[in-house]
Image (tube, rainbow, N blue to C red; front, side, top):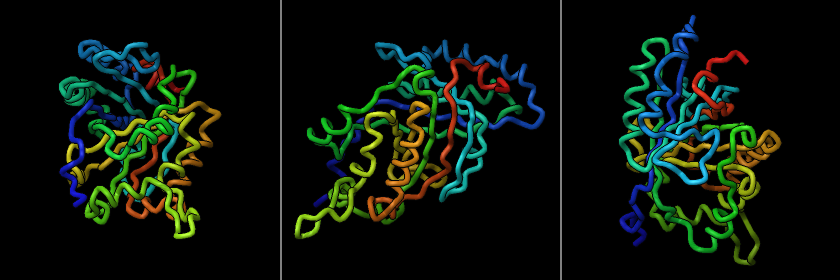
Length: 271
């Protein structure tokens, strides 16, 4: 009873964040000339800086570093990344080809680390939760409207994966004592303040739990400048196990903060 065999396994889309670290003495002009835009065009990846009204085959985004905060898992390839490229597609081939070709095009001047995953159907979301949370969620806006990008990779502990899906489900909802008093908010209420202002995207590992050295979840958020404090407040609420007991089973990688920019060359401007 409660086995994971009943969970949806369909893959809806594929995505990856390619973390870039620039070598000392980087020749910015030479790297700017790398054929990354041509690769994106070949793969029919539309630019997320100006979201299309109708989603295309895939998308690409360029994120320039603002800073990073270390967490439980040390990961210098993420925390020290100078830039991040996001690629996404409904099929795996464009993402795989981009992640394979980009390091070849960049050569030794740039080291890369790929955080990849898939989007699956929501297993713990009924009609009421869909209407309460996801139907009210903000959709992607043009870069100038929501310029901040946060990359938040994380994994769950062995103890989490040992639980059946029914028990895991209970951590996302509020808990009440026998008198009907709320004892903890759970994930959903702890994150409520972000529903209307934080774009959220989550890639899951293709297998759960993820292989050694990979993350179970790669979370990503976008928001306006005015809503950056809300992002941090939501993260603080989720990390508080008295409000959200689920977090006792979470180990986070670095929180990376970037700025959405319109083009590949903009990653190398000195602004």
